[in-house]
Each structure stands twice: as C-alpha cells, then as structure tokens.
Amino acid sequence: MAKLEKATITVLDGAKAGHVIDVLFNPTEYSFDRSNAFKSTAVPGLGSPLIQFINGEADQLSMELFFDDYTDPAAKQTGARKQSVESRIAELANLLNIDRDLHAPPTVRFGWGPLEFAGVIEKLGRKISLFQPDGTPARARVAISFKEYRTLTEQLRTPRRESADKSKRRVIVGADSLWALAAREYKDPAQWKLIADANELDDPRDIAPGQWLYLPPLEDANGHA
Picture 1 (tube, one colour):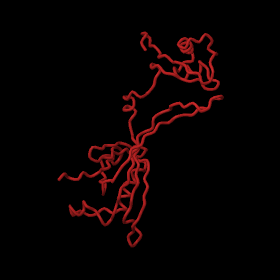
Picture 2 (cartoon, rainbow, N blue to C red; picture 1 turned 120 degrees about the vertical axis):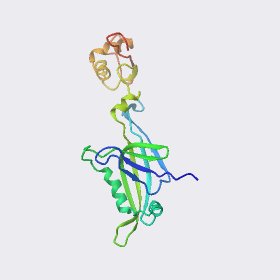
Picture 3 (tube, rainbow, N blue to C red; picture 1 turned 90 degrees about the vertical axis):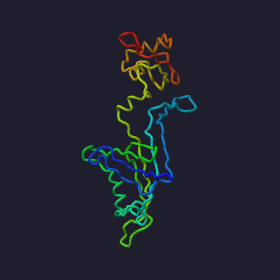
Picture 4 (spheres, rainbow, N blue to C red; picture 1 turned 180 degrees about the vertical axis):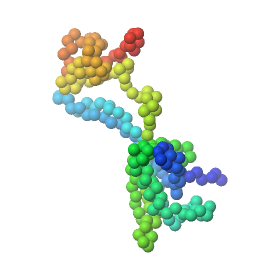
C-alpha cells in the first residue's frame, strides 16, 4: 500500500525561509483560477464597446483545510505532542504579515505530490465549528487562497509580451491620432510616418474611430526587425 503523501506549505524567503508547515488533513479538493484584464472603450456610433487586452492575471490556487483538536494522525503515530487548532491557524495567519527582512509577506510553496505551487497567501478565512470549554477553537475549516508569484526575470523569459519589434494591430479610439499612436507603441511620435506608410494613408489625419491600423515592427540600426 502506497504511503500517504502529506501536503505542506513551505516558506521560501524572509526571516523564516525553509520553515515547513504540515497540513493536518490533505484537502479533499482544490481549484485553479486564472483571468485576463480587459479595457472596454465606448466608441460613438458602435453597438458595443471595443475590448482591448491589458494584461494577464496571476494563477490562483484555492482550497479548504480542516483542523481538529481531537484528531491528529501524526501525533497518534509518533507519540508527539499535538499542535492545537488555535496554534495551527495562527501559524498560517502569520504568513499574511509583513516580513521584517522582505518588507512584504513572504512567498510560500504549497506542495502535495506532483503539485508544486509557488505564490503568496492572498486570503485566509476561518470558520470555527467547535470550542473548548474556555472558548478556545477546537475545530475549524480554513479557506485559503494562494496567488502565483513569479519574479521579473521569470516573466521576461516567457514570450507573452508585445514590444515595438513585433507587428500588431490597433484600433482608432475617439480623437486618436497617428502621432499619439506612435508615441504609445514606439515611444516616439515621429514614427507616425511608419504607420501611415504601412496603411497607405496619404493624409495622416484621414482616420476615424473604429478603424483598424497595422503597426509594423521597428527596425534596428542594422535594418533588422
């Protein structure tokens, strides 16, 4: 019979880097969520707004963890002292606090078998359903959400960004102009002529809201895109 793999939460940086929190009971289920951010721009005369992609959001891992003072499998097997529900919840809640070395909450890794998810704890909700005679929590369900954390170096390695050396299409919105479009896309309003030539515009002012324009890639000093 295969050995039961226990889920863990490991602190990756800060003053408690390397500290491992053992989950009392493995979650019965978990969910992944991911979304994108879009901007809606109303254009006079159109039946619906124009939708423009802004950026991708980070992955989110969510689950519910169960804690019970009266059931601690690890303590029963090893004879070790049981860790109370109150202390387990406090240990997780402390990961939301600002670390003195990082000046921000630490990043953590949730690991369970093949699942490895690095991120920060975004949200922690506690529901207490049983109490000790003195009112101390004895049983709880903790809803926890992790948000993916990726360093700038990791994100720059992924080819999901647009840049001035890539061709793209943009729509004219409101009182937009080729000069403003060139400034946004190429960081140089003087590149309006590049856009005009690519779209065979004899008059750079002859554009209208809702019109799509092709933006060619910029060439470097050696003539390469």
